[in-house]
Image 1 (cartoon, helix red, strand yellow):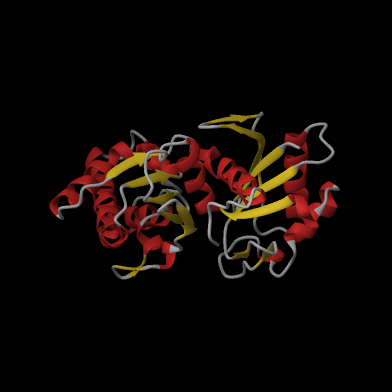
Image 2 (cartoon, rainbow, N blue to C red):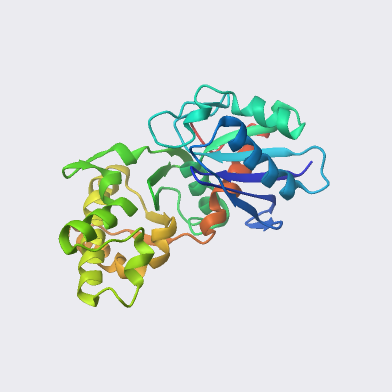
Length: 293
C-alpha cells in the first residue's frame, strides 16, 4: 500500500505520494493549499481533505503520514492546540477519526508525527543530515520549530519556549522579531522577512538587522551545542533560504566561543516534514521507530 505524506501547518497543507529506496526518496506531484487557521473545524477539515484526496488520486486506501505542529497528542491523534493562535476550533477533537471519516479510510492507517521532528527525520534519513548521528534542527519562519537527534533517536526539542534574553527563543528567532525591530528601530513597516530584500530598504538597515539576527542565533545555539554535543545544525523554514545574509554572523559568534559545528541548510526544504512523517510511519510499522514523542 502506498504512503501519502502530509505537512500541516497553521495556515497551509501540502501532501504527496512518498516512496523511499535507501537514501533516495521519490515524491509524487505536490498538492498544497492555504488554510484559514481561524476557520471552523469543518472548514479546516474540508481544506485538508481536498488536498489529500488530490494527492491520493485514484487510490481508495493508503497509509496517511501526517506531520503536525504541537501541542498535539500524537499517539491518539487528538489536537491540544488552544493558545497558539492556530486551529483552535479543533481543540480536543480526534483529528485521526475526523480524517478517517472524511477520507473513507481506516483510522489505523493514519499516523501523526511532530512537524519539527518529522523535518529532522527527513533530513537525517535522506537529506542534509545523513552523515550525523547527533544533530539539532531549527525551522525558522513565522514560528520556531526544533528537534534533536541523539545517537540516532529523534525527538521534538520544544525550544520555542526556551528562555532567551528578555523573553523566549521564538521572540528572537522568527518573523516577528524582524517585524518588531524594523518598526521600533527604523519606523519601517514590513509584513515579513522578504520585505527586507526590497531595493527600497537601505543596505545599512538590512545588514544591521541580519547581523543582529545571526548573532542572536549563535548566542541561542551556544549552550545547546555544548550540552548536546551536536555535530551539525540543520536549518529549515523560509528564513533559512536567505541564510547567506545572517549565517556568517552566527558562525563568527560560535567561533569566538570556541564551538566547532557544521551549520547546514535543509536539502528537502518544504518537503522535509512530509517525507520525515512517511519515514517515521514506515519505521513504526516495522517496529523500529526513529522518534520518541
